[in-house]
Length: 89
View 1 (spheres, rainbow, N blue to C red):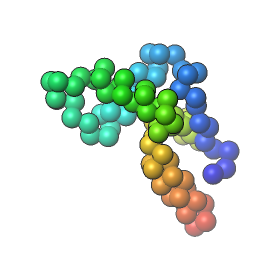
View 2: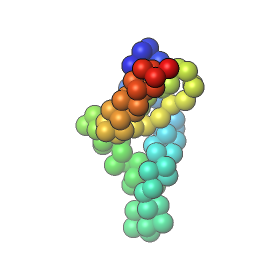
View 3: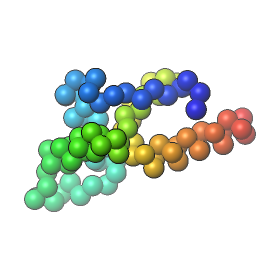
View 4: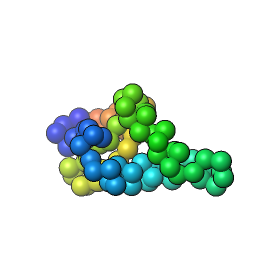
């Protein structure tokens, strides 16, 4: 995928920025944030472990100037969609 995307190492982000990205990921992915036994801090802590294990990526799109957290499956699917778009366009 062209030079449009940059993977951002999670250790390079300030803690507040990383937490905000992960909280957004939790809400977009449909995690049950109403569960009283698991709060947002628990989800964020779990996601940080996934980042450590390279199960999640933080990707910055230079074209849209947006930064997203993605699972490896999402990233691979996203890459295929972009390749298809580039072939069609």
